[in-house]
Length: 627
Image (cartoon, rainbow, N blue to C red; front, side, top):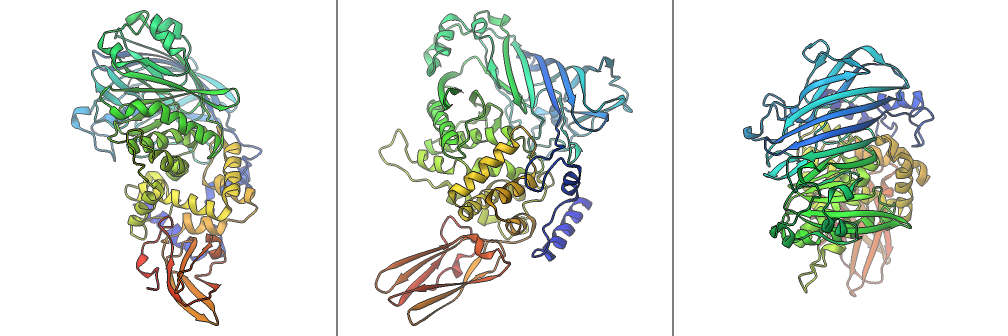
């Protein structure tokens, strides 16, 4: 409760000085002072971040439904601080019955969480039963250190652990049938220690997702199944040792089918050495590692050239009953090319991408867990949205635990044009169906806007629940980006976005790095815009206050009843059937004014004036016309 009161007071106090003072949290001011961040949006001269190098061997025990692993970590403490404790994320503790969750889990999926058998830090074995040394609050494991991890040091950590694989109704990962798995949130992971918060102590409770250091992974995966195909983050290092001759030949092609329905039905041997198979995957500069597996999934493959001489291998692995999944590999190739060449126009950051047919819709580095969709448009939307997450939060290293809009908002907004275009081209229909995903997003925002649940976007995501969290992270964020793009123009907006990506990829940007970069690159002080959209209670509501015509000069007064800077779009219908369109960007409100007057010469009597359009949020459209 105290957290909410403090947040509320800060917002109210900040709102009182909206026109004179741009709110900057103390953590950000401290970062400026320490030189880790800059007020122009660049990483500071003293910017640092920590990194881990993981070497993991994992065994998938399908008979006991168990993951058993051994893990060596080389942890680089690049910070200026000596660390007196080490914080691990034990995500599967989420399944312990007594843990706090904001995602409903069936009692059938309750487990004992992560069982740690051995833990050594710099050669010293840790007494795991001593609660003065090891504590397990939430999904964190905090280890108190008698010998601190020194600044600028590299530290060796070894862990042996295991956990039970949860069933299908577990969020984002689990067992989908007796030989089909999505394995995520699965290994002891060192939490982020950064220049803003120190150790990230936010527990995984089901809603907010990632904030991980950019790390390197060398992972070997084995199982007790003769024919289990494993897809994973990274690039497979030993396909010649893994696949049987006929599967290897198809795998080495740039596109086509690797495993077909007839292969599955006829019992084709997929693996060269059966249960002795070890998959060896490597992935560098990624914030996480996951893998999926099945012995009866169709496997399609495509290749996208995302820049001259730069390629991404695309896999779609799916249940034969998932009808629309047969198009997914080609859809994903198209969206990766769109993201690389059109918007944002930055080459896709990874050499591999797999869309796995599990459940729901969940992104991971180089891997997506997508449920079965029931139509073409949903398939396009889901594939594009989850693939776009490759940029945000993974390439950009965003903290979506605190700032969900910094990744989900982009994953909604960036692929909209692609989703509209591709979604209207159903390959099994002669009729193009126009689906405007921007309208759908605006409509969702309008349902929440102006209610008690519509809190300022800068409110930390981890203290919010739906609909506040989803509104801020998804639809409201997408609306903000669209209004900003309209204000800066297509080229200006893309220039700012690409520079933001250039400055902060593989790092840890926070909201003010985003704010400051866009202001810096655009050459405009956008603090008034950030203040209104991110830091104040306000709502989208423009009104036609009055309209008068004298000597063929039409004067229209628009009132900003909700306080948010929105574009002003006017459609003027004249008695002689002429239609006049007027568009003003949200910049008309930058001086803090609450009314704007627009004049237009007309050559006939005005029949009607309509304010707004379906792409501009407005919670009360009844006062948007003079009819």
